Image 1 (cartoon, rainbow, N blue to C red):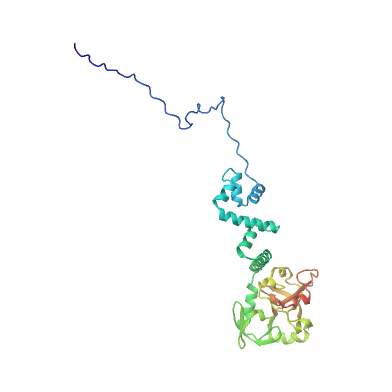
Image 2: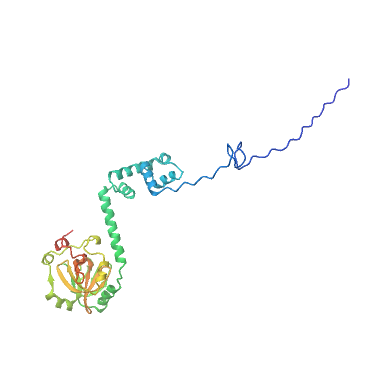
Length: 312
């Protein structure tokens, strides 16, 4: 019997399957549909969190405001941040505890207290001093000092014989140089500006001396000059500007009392008197001030001699 040849089976052609759409998950229905039929509506964006909401959550969870804001926007939750940043979270616990013990203490100030090692009272006092110093510096920068500089340079170039009045004595000399914190006199040498009460020409001083009135208490014990400008009775020159041209009444720290016309206001000094008979007065030498046309001015008229004469 002859062998039977094997039969060749030809497979039927199969149609290629469509690839799953990249825009939908496998097993999902047609694009745009949802279970139960119909089409999904776009989500309404949530409103941005308010500062009050952010602050409330940050205070509750003891986290930075940016983390609280993130949770309210659907990002990282506060508790997750605290787990991931345990050391920083402990610092925030300390800061918020400090704020709870001191109502009114701001978050930046609480961090400042924690980092400085000072008490709350010490830190706030230091902050106030810093702000006062910055305010004085800003105030001085807003006043033109050109006229005062020209007056002093004129005395320097002319080698005019001067009377430099100090707290308890008067030096008769000429000006040979001007330094940032000192005058250099021709015969007496360097003199710190803080020691100077007033400067005028020697000839004017000799005529002025017999007429001078003095506060006897300050004459016996001149008021000290604080090294810190913000602690002096007068360090801001701006309130003097409206009184230029007016008759002003000045009491200096060694008791000298002057009633003269205010000619020039500089950053650190005043010039009073008449043309050719000027008197140079540093602001640090003033303990009281009033203007004739502004008798109710509260600049310094309310400062008593006792308070102004106290030593630091």
